[in-house]
Amino acid sequence: MKTRKKLIYSLLLIFGIVVIANFLSSGLFLRLDFTEDSRYTLSKATKDILRNIDEPVTITAYFSKDLPPNVAKNRQDFLEMLQEYSAISHGNVVYEFVNPSETPEIEQNAMQKGIQPFLINVREKDQVKQQKAYMGALIRYADREEVLPFI
Image 1 (cartoon, rainbow, N blue to C red):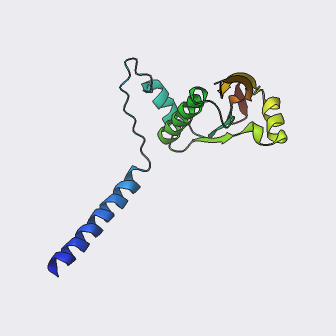
Image 2 (cartoon, helix red, strand yellow):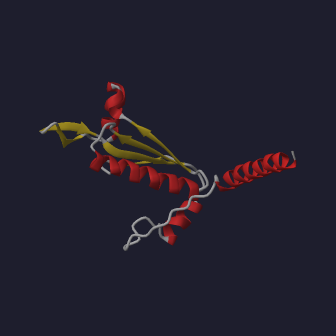
Image 3 (cartoon, rainbow, N blue to C red):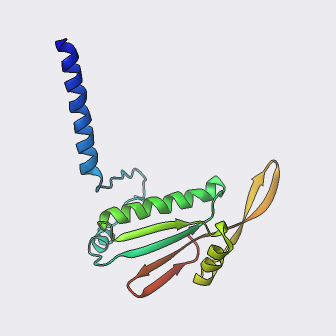
């Protein structure tokens, strides 16, 4: 009976530690960069800029769904970068991902903002076909907008 109580208390203690550790680490972003050129490490200047943002920067990323793996990696890399920016800026970098191909209205809006589609070659069942894709972003800060037509 005592061993059963000990087991229950131990499990509750472990659960409590995990919950507290999760809560404390929710505002942290940690990335280990083992690349030779420190490709995934932000410079001190970039971190300083992100920490000193005084009003929200909104980034709308326009990425197509169902991209080939070699192209879809750009989306994942951009997402991870924005997550890191958001964590360092204490939530002042706000982002969303939009699929322009979802509706004609969203596609038209993206093109009006300066995000243009491009054609990529996709290989399916020993055939190569071309697919329209979007990979751009719109950055808004205060009353300014900047377009990244291609990422």
